[in-house]
Every structure is written in structure tokens, then in C-alpha cells.
Length: 609
Image (cartoon, helix red, strand yellow):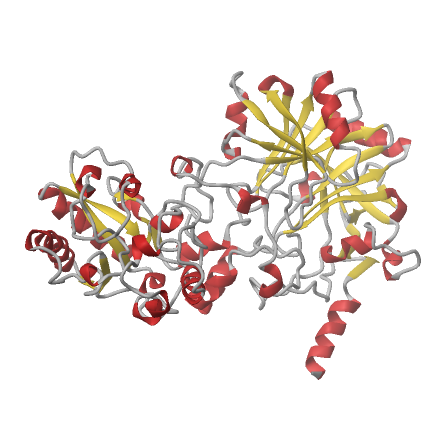
């Protein structure tokens, strides 16, 4: 307790600092940690801001140059400037050839020597600039902040403060009442990736359960974080969206889904002029992008109405594109951003407000101000997949059929299952490579594999157990478990752990090559009992005597209740899988376990997408 008290007091006593000195000093305090990397404290930091533009003759719009801790926050400020400061900005804007003008809270003399820095922890921003600020509080000593101007600061490349500062220009002086905090968001997953990968590996499969949450404060624990959502979590991903956008620098083996985008909207200083800033977060949304937008009078009217409240106005695009490609997209006159305009939205947690209007903005209305890649702002779940070497089976076997039943409502529960966000089969690389050999062999026999389930998140297994205990919900009984009482499903068919969560277990069947199968779900239209398979071959599937996930004795691989020719079909699948190291579970003809699985004792819980 004594040590904890000392640590807390150290953090509190150095949560902000404003000092001048004769040589560079590294602050001693720290800004805490977050639950995704609890062993690493964020140090106190000085901060840089991109100057987006004028909102009127005496105010500038600033966007924080977000980064790894202690800079892993997205916040936007509106600052009041005097005539000299505005003239300085306009002069530097004319000189800017790369990027946009900027400021840093480091003070330099004219010989470019550091003479002062203002440090503060970004979790304190609501108390420093926001609604929680109090006159005469401990943060008063931060002010006035002396900020040095920057020009030609390449925010999209190797950012170097020393090369971009212009200390010969008059300082920008920030007083507390000059600053308005417009947007404030915390990015827990914006981390040093090498450190994060090491931590994920140390935690193992059990640690992956917390990776899909989105906390809104640096010190929230997992139980609190699970209540929050993000814009990325609202996006429905589909088969066609996968593998469209370029891979991230830190995850070169993973191309990313093409997605819609959300933009924060701010009024400019000219008539019908606005600034649109990307609501950046997890890759592929990890681009700090700003447009200057020229709107029509009718478009301006709609936006002005949405800006009347104190909450952010958002444009959420209905069309999908890769922000990584925005420069080339804007060269095409046919490109547009179209979508719905919302007012009164909440950003942390993400909640869309009221829909105001639809907007379509053409390429010639958009002037790109900056498009900065935030390489370290990755989906922690994707990082975990990389650390533990899970792969999408389609990247290994492009011609395999995949129909993940738990990503649909056609399963024994009757709705889409927790943890499934896409029709994707994830497996450990070892299992995927072995399955590729199986596909090669069955193709020689005139078949292809059709996959029903692969890696299964632990949260999905938890949902199965919870559902099984609710004896009032039996809507799918006649179809999937007609001969079993629901009260007997646990532990006879459902357990609190599943081999699927280890990543080397797969459920699958065979389909005939040349069949017009697109989705085996076609079979559900006529299926009323999983034990009756008349007509299943019309879908292209081989008749195995029961449908998938049939809780019945007939589903036992060597069941005496199934006619011989159907048992022979099962034997083809079983023997081919066994040849390549997969062992069949005798109570389910479709269920196979890689004998030498990579993680025999670990259960994972990142989502499937």
C-alpha cells in the first residue's frame, strides 16, 4: 500500500508541468497506463497541433497530432487569437509547401534552442480546457502556454519538430479562456506495437477476451470498458468488403476491409466553407484526414441546422472506400462522398444522433488538407491474430466454400452468435495448411470442402451455455434437437469450453465440384428436421445423413441409424481428413481436430471478421 501511495502521488504531482530551463529536461512524472498495456506508463508530454484553418477572423481550428502514449487521444480545439497571431498564421500558410502550419507547446529561442516546455496529461484535458475546468485550480499554473509555430511539418511522413519550427516568428500565446475543447476521444489501442505484441503473447489466449472493448478513459478496467462501443463496431462487414484496402505497416500480411467513414464537421470562415475531419480509430479507419469542403447553399443550410447543438455533427458515408487511396480517388471526377448527416451524436461511447439529411459531395467540392496514417492505431484483435498466427482460410485456400452458420440466424439458437462479425473462417496456420492438402485431395475425387465453423470465440461458447440454461427458449428445437430435451444439452452436446476456441478445430462437409452452390443456406428453406436430408444434394452438398449441427444419434459418425451409402460418404471425408492429421469427433461427423494442434491448452476470444 505504501508503494502504491507513492506511485499515485508521483503521478498526481507531475500530471502537468510548465517550466523554462537552459537544457532539455525529461519530465519525471507519468500519465498512467491502460488495461491493454498495464505494465507501461505514459510519460508526461508536450504536444503538437495541426492548424486546420480559420473558423472566423479571430479563431483557429486545431487538431492534436495524435500518436502513441502519451499522445493517444483525438482532441480538437478552437482557439482565440489576436490580430498579430492571425497574421502570422496567414503568412505561414502562404509559405507552407508540405502539410499545414502547426504549433508545439515547446518554446524555442531564435537560435532554435529549447528554453521551455509545457507538459500535461491528456486525460486532464476536460479539467484544463473543458467543462470541468475550475477557476483557480491547480492547472492555472500551466498558463500562459507559449507555443512555437511550425511550417512545412510533414504530418504524413517522418515528423521532425526541429526542422519545422520557425522561432523567429512571434509566439502563439494561449491563455486558458482562449481555448475551447470541441472533441475529446481516447484511443486505448494506439500503442507501441512491439511492446503490445509482446504483452499479448505473454497473456496467451485468456488475455484476448479484453481486446474487443473500447474504453473511454485511460484507467477503466475491462468490466467498464465492455459497456462502450465505437464507430468501427457499428460497421457491418460483408464478404465483398474483405481484402480491399492496403495492409498496415505493422501488419503487412493482413489486407483490410473497405469501409464507410464518419466525418466531424466544423464551419469555416468563408460562406459555404466547412472543414470535414475523419473520425479516426481502428485500422482501416486509422487516418487523420481533413478536407476543406465547398458546399452548395442547400447543403450549407442542412449542415448549419445540424451544428446548432453543442454536440458534434457527423456525416456518415454510405459508400465505402479506402482512406489510404484518397489522393488517387480525388483525381477521379466520378468520386463522391455520400451519406447521412447526423446531429447530436456522442463520440465516447459512439452513439449516432438524429438523422438530418442526406448529402452527396462531389470530388470537385473536396480539397484534401492532410491525410496522415496512424500506423500504430490497430485493432488489438487483428494484432492478436498475427501474434498467434491465425489466418483467414480464404488466403490459404481461395476456392474453398465458407458458410459460417453462427454468423447467421440459421443455427440451433436462431440468431447470430456473439463474436461473429463476418462470414470468415479463421484457423491456426498449421491447421489451415493441412486443410489445404485435404482440399487438394478431395478435388481429385470431384469434391470441394464446405466449411461451417472454424475458430470459435470463447464469448460464443459462453452464449451457448447461457442459452442452454434458458429452458423457455426452444424455438429451434424441432429443427436442430428434436430428440433431445434442452435440459440435457449441457454437458451432452454443449460445454463451457470448446476445442474450436483453440483455433485448430473445424466443422465441414463435402460439395460436388461443378455444382452451382453459392450458399448452403438454400437448404434451410425446406428443412424442418435436421435428421431428414431429402433434397440436400440440390444445394450441391453431399448427403451425410443429417444436416450440420444436428443434435441426434444419427449424427454420430458411425451411427447404425444411417444407411450404408451415407456412411460411405462420411468415410470419404473422415479418411481424407485423417490422412492429413485431423481426428474426427465420433459424435459429430462434421467435426475434426488437428492432432498436433498449436494451442492444446489455450482458449481464445477475439472476434471473427
